Every structure is written in structure tokens, then in C-alpha cells.
Picture 1 (spheres, rainbow, N blue to C red):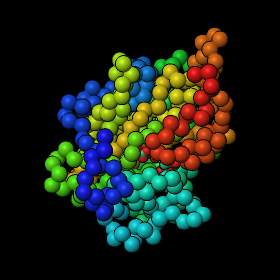
Picture 2: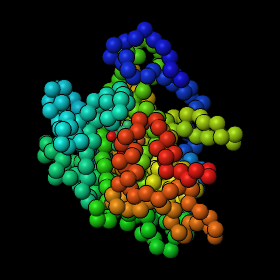
Picture 3: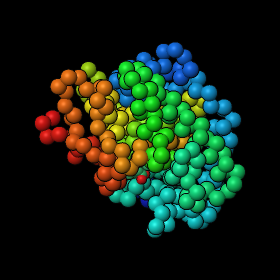
Picture 4: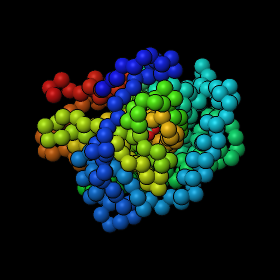
Length: 338
Ligand SMILES: C=C1C[C@]23C[C@@]1(O)CC[C@H]2[C@@]12CC[C@H](O)[C@@](C)(C(=O)O1)[C@H]2[C@@H]3C(=O)O
Ligand SMILES: O=C(O)CCC(=O)C(=O)O
Ligand SMILES: [Fe+2]
């Protein structure tokens, strides 16, 4: 829902949104105790219902998250010219970015670091962040969150009744797996000041994540919203209450295909407000570029056919990165009969 305002220059290309009222809070977001006996079942249930859940009891020390967060706050507090020097180079797409998301004209009220991950740490080819303390804090965080992603996918495979417990997790931990890490900073939006506490601007526009799963952690500032479907399939945006001690997991497009639509990738977005900064870390767990993305045989009932034509993660990624953020990226891979 776009509210037309007197064209403030700083946000002239960033849509302003009506904020959802308090009744639109996703207060019953499914919570998975990752160390508990019911994790496998709870994950599958949450993925079937919402494509989204919160993970607690994950074993990642609070200090790992806190140190990474305070280093990130320090990075973004630098002078603009210093941050711009960390921007992407022509030959290398990763680094610092501000307001522009991707290459196809999407804008948001945020700044970010988009970083490549090799195995369990930031890729050596990734020149930013260059500060040793920040880099080592992020490396510690990435190793921990990668482990959480693998444990979530192992429990998911168990819950789905797949005999090979590593069928999903090995896709995102195996050689050549394609991991991306993103640090987002949503500063308070000055153009919203004086417009009332419900006024918000688009921080990160609505989209689904293309990978298998994404694992998100933020500071205590809310802003993440997910689209839920009611019984009549009508879409409703709800705010996810922030929880700096938990991780949130999104089902991505690739997992939708691997489960032949049993799980659907969750549409989500971030809105910013006029008062508080949001800092988030998102680990995008993808497979190797040559990995075939097709429904797992164990998940197909007898005679059930794939809803999608075959593709590799590399093909999907290339196609996805040509789309706008809000596009339905899977549509071009859906079989015509549906
Ligand atoms: C507009 C875009 C940004 C994005 C690449 C894309 O063309 C479409 C997918 C976008 C997305 C969403 C999830 C992740 O934040 C991301 C890193 C990804 O893998 O796909 C971003 C891409 C990006 O920021 O470059
Ligand atoms: O910053 C957030 O909380 C979520 C951002 C997001 O969805 C993304 O980077 O893909
Ligand atoms: Fe996302």
C-alpha cells in the first residue's frame, strides 16, 4: 500500500508504506527448540504452514552474535566515503552497497555488506570488511550460523522421513556449495519524522529468497514482516517480533522445488521507522552451482510428477539475478500444466 507524500528528495525512489497495526503482529510465529526431541516434526509443520519459523536453544553463544553486531555497528558508523571505498568493484559483485539492491533498479532505505562465503568463513577473495576484528567476528558468526543451517536441514530431512539424514544438509555444506552472507543496516528514516509512529519506509522490498534456506538474526529492532495466507488464500502482511537471541529461518525457492511445493518459499520484506536502527545478519544457504534442483525422489508419491522443469542451482541463480526483487522467480521454471 503506497502512501503518496510530498516527494522528500532522499526517499523519492523508496516506497513509503502504511505500517501494520498491532493486531498484525505474528505473535504466534512457530518456535523450534533445536536441541529438543520435537525439532524435526516442528520444523516440517512450520514449513508446511508458513515457510518460516524461529529457532531457539541453538547453542550459538550470545557473545558470538553480540560481538559481530557491535563490529557491524562500528563499520556502518564510518564516514560515507570510507564505506563507499568498500563498494563492489566492476569485476567483483560483493562489498558495501547503499539503497540499491541488486542490479535491476530495486531501492530500499538501507545499507549493507554482501559477502561471499567459502566453506565456513568469508571468502579470501572478499576484500571487505578489511578490519581484522570485524572480519574475525564475522568469521566466527558465519561458522556458527552455517552449523545451525546444517542442523536445521538435518532435522528437516528427518521430519520429512528421508532415509539419508544428510540429503539436504550436505547440499549446503558440501564442496562448492554456494553460500552468501549479508549484513544489513536500516538507519532511521528522517523523512518519516513527524508523520506519526506508524509511518514506515521500505527497507528491503517484498521478495522470496532463491536459496534452500536463509538463517536470519537481527538486533532488537523489529521491521521484518512475512506474508501469510489465510483460509481463502488472501495474503496478509504480519510483523515478526524481534528476538536478538533467536534465529529466524526462511524457506527459499530451491527448497520449494526440492519438496515439490509441499513447502512454499516465504514472501518477506523489511520496513524501517523514524526512530531505531535495525541491524540484521542473513546467511543464505545454497547448493553448488551444478546441483540439480528437482523434487527429492523420497518425497514424491507414486505417480506424482515434478511441478517444475529441471534446472541446476547455477541456472536458477543466473535467472534470479536478472529479475526484480518482487518478481515470482520460480514462475519461469513451473511446468505449463499448473
Ligand atoms: C533484485 C535482486 C537482489 C537479489 C538479486 C535480485 O536480482 C533478485 C534476488 C535478490 C536476492 C534476495 C535474497 C538475498 O538478499 C540475495 C543476496 C539473493 O541471493 O537474492 C538478493 C540479491 C542481491 O541482493 O543481489
Ligand atoms: O534484513 C532483514 O531482516 C531481511 C533482509 C532480507 O530478507 C534479505 O537480505 O534477503
Ligand atoms: Fe530475504
